[in-house]
Image (spheres, rainbow, N blue to C red):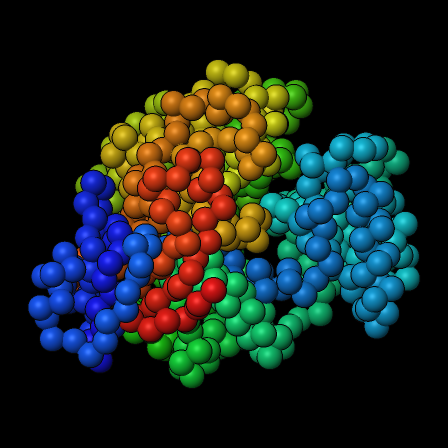
Length: 532
């Protein structure tokens, strides 16, 4: 069936729009003026009534299953104090009395406005319950806190060690319930494993939300635990039964090389991927943690915590061995690196595994937050794709300069500088760390102001991206990460018919209103998957 959408403002590329578009069999056949496109043979005409149309948006790094899981957990994002968290936990238990392990998601001590502004500890969670284990993830998921019962069930003592992570000790020399980096996963082993039915329920719920905000493609890290084969099988089943409403690409995390080798001998060989709707994707690694938790790996000590430099989730040797093995198998690698120490390690490692200095596999960096000018230039020179999250500025603007000092802050979160240097820059949300709503993310990229409009002048406004560059970062540049820029990410003949219809003209409204844009319709492969 062929369909014409006409009377619209269709974004083709910077400074280029069309009025109408012809779609047939999931592919764009022609774009142009109303008059020209209506000359083509067609079965149906849909009047856009002047509305703006963008290519479908492609989040280059998030966690779809975690989004769904959070929807079914005790949500803590609204907490503005430790007392709030205690109240939310008690209320959830009262409403779910059969809970065996209480899982909390999304607290952030930087948002506390009453009482102590610090990390949670086991004593705080013991105020909720000492009868069942509690596991409360910080918003970044690089710090997780357990109550006394959780530590008791795991048998954690002051002598317990986890490679690439830390179990913090309190003033009494005993574990205080705070786990970071690789130790987070150790604490999370106390949570009952989900069934395939649970995983599918989480996935489908999150997918429905994602398409409602305009995502037609996701590059998602959902393989993060020892039961990864179950997750692969569940998502494969969703793809096989035609339930995918968006295009899905894996970002599979294996911090231990033996797990990665097992993947290479199983899923890598036997997985069924068509690379159109369901893609094999990339190896996702973690080099460090987060700025908010002070686990981002810095070259020098934190400005507001002398003696601390963060946490190394993988040693340089471990990182190299994993990247080398992946490159030998022609597998792309993307590495979580936030601190300038972690970023330097990743740059050095990638340069060692590249073919004659050419990044042919497009190994990338996720986050790339704290950077020096030299690092930005080297990333651009090596054409290392960077997956930025402008929405992180919502939480980080109040803490960046205190954490790292003014001089380093000037060259950090350098979205515009790196884009202008020619590096492949794409945008993502790392949801559920932040909401996967792309328009709040684009708002931050363009304005560098928090959602409440502060700071009034913008945070280092010279790093504001243009609106077109930000949209391209969500479309053609995100497709570049996946080697799909020849058929996805533009509304041009020969590209797939993935597009979104907006409720207002994002190109003419005041930039402060970008965060309020809504999606009227989401179209994937020429089919409507969401209507508002």
